Each structure stands twice: as C-alpha cells, then as structure tokens.
Image 1 (cartoon, rainbow, N blue to C red):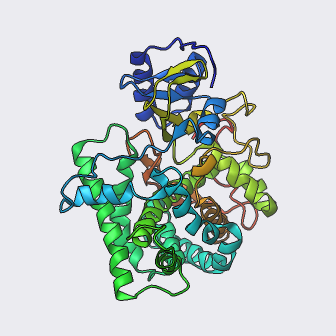
Image 2 (image 1 turned 135 degrees about the vertical axis):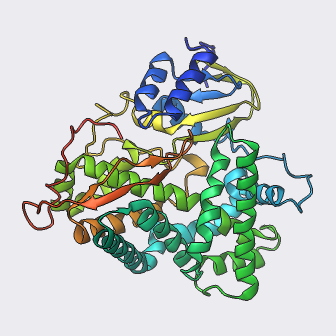
Length: 435
C-alpha cells in the first residue's frame, strides 16, 4: 500500500466503455493494453476498483491482510426452501469465499489430497479418460466430417476426471454438466436475476447430488469425497456439517468449466500456431512449460474479486474499507512490464509465472489437477488426430469473468501431413495473433 493517492487518468465512464469492449470482443487483450496505459488501477461506474497491471494484480492476490475473499451474507437469513438461496448459502460457506480461521481449517482438510504428489496415483486413470474422449472425438469427425470439440471432449472430460478423483461413478458427469455450466454465471459482476436464479439452483443441485451419493454410500472409499466425509467426522467440530458435500460441489464448479475452457482455448491456440505445435511435438519434455505459456497467453478465468479490509491507497489509488476490487488476470498476463512482447506465443520459452490460478492463501487448490488434465489430453490429441484443424471459429459465451467457449467445430485436414504425426498441414497464421 502506498501513502499518497494518485488517481489514474481514466474516468469511470471511460473504464466502463473499455470493459464493455473487452466483454464483447473475441480478443480483449488490446483493450487491456489501453487500460494499462491509462494507469494500474481504475474506478468503475459501479464504484469498484479494477487492477490491470501485473504488479497490482499480483499484490492484491497475495496480500490477504488488505485484500479479503469476497464472501457474502446476502442470503444468510433468507428462506432456504428457495433453491437459489440454498445454493448460494452453501457455496459462500466453502473456503474459497472465507478468510482465516475458517478458511484455514477447511482448506487444510483438502490440501494434501490435491497436491501433485497425491494426484500421481490418479494419473493412469486420467490418461485413460483423456484417450477415451479423444477417441470419441476422432470417431465423431470420421462419422460426420466434423465435430464440436467442446461437446465431445472439453466439457465431458474434466467432469469425468473430477468424478474419478471424487470417487463417484464416471457416469455422474452427464448429470453434473448442466448445473456445473450454469453455476459459472455467479462470477459475472452484472449477472441478471435470471442468471442468479439459475446459478443458485445449479449450486443447490450439485450439493444435493453429493449428499445423495454419500447417503447411498455410492462413493469409492478411497475417493476424495469419502476422504472429505471422514475429515468432517473426525474434525471435532472444526469442519461444519455438510462440509464434504459442499466442498465437492464447489470443486465441480471451479474445476469443470475452467478446465474445459482452457483445453478448448489451448487447442485453438495450437491450431493457430502450427510451427510451435510442431516444435512441441518434437520436444515432449517442453510440455509443462508450454502449458504455463498457454495459460498465460489466454487465461480461462479473466478476473478474480477481492474486498478491501481497510481504508488506504493501492498503487496510487484511494481505497475505502469494503470496496470491491476486480483483479484483471487477463490484463496482467499481457503486461509488457513483466513479459517481453506479451502478445506473441512462445511455447518453448515461457517467460513469467501465470496468475491464472491466483496467489496467496487463495491460490487454486486444483492447479496441479488442471495441469495434469491438460498434460494428458494434448499428447493424446496429437497422437490420435494429428491433422486436426478448426472448421470454424470458437463461439464464446458473453461475459467478462470467464472466457468460456461454448462451441468449437473441428475437422481434419484432407491433405496428408508432411511426415507422420505432423500437424504441418494446418492453416498457418502469424505467430503474433491474439487468442
């Protein structure tokens, strides 16, 4: 926190106009550039703050003393017979919306199970699911000439993985997909009453699905849902009633659509940069770094929200206690102050840690799982469908918080690759193209 205020040159109306342009554009990054050039922090027409530089965003995500989880008591005293109210109540009681000490206890029960080392045991199953979904995509293209990458691969795959991790029947993914998709509207700052109703009802459906599976004892004893139930039972009151079902529902919301969008966006990016895709195929050891660069280049989650704990000054901008801050992860990821030539993709030379998974005590617990999912599916795509190409542009859902891709038609090139497994026949576009 700085000591002297220094407001940016942008007016709230100007900020709102630029944000609207970003929301309605398939390529918001030039708009973010304009916002960064106007200053590191701005005030929106709603009276909220907007951080757009990497320095400001990173500080807000990591400073859990000044910047708190948003949380909400808005629905705490409403009639819980309303599905919308029940859903919001349950979600706001999970650790992603809480601060210490409640956040600490709830997160601790999950941390070890979601660590990369613990997830290694699930990796063979994840790879089998990746191969099966890629094979389904290949069959759909063969049978119909083209297929929707989202409906066939990107949407079902992460939910099947989550069912595998939680210890649920993999078939549950089909039932969980509609509410998991609807629940993502909660991230939008301007969600309508219709969106809020759909979101709250979707959250309630996910929680009750988990409660039903636990009551039926239809969960694998070594799965994560059973682990959460045992942690709740042995916590001596440190974990609240309903913790296991509530946390599992939150994981489905947070870990399905974000991974789906990242997967579809990563494939779209690779198809538009075939030279780099070839180099990546020839150097599989570069895959972990390439995944980081893909996350930076087009983050699936564009914003995070925080709430100010006290009055002060933030990067030269006055702050009042309780004021909301929008952390523009997408803008930070293309900040030339930390990434040279940020609008160019460099899969073999990732240049900065991504803020896609947040930071500080609220760093995404599913980060290791998301990376593992992408690392399993990209090689399977290259192996099974080496001549994959876009059959049209991806269709994104309107909204600012999440770059959700709803449809992405794909097919295969009719021209054989120059050599086996090479995607060199894909359409070539300039390497500096934006997502």
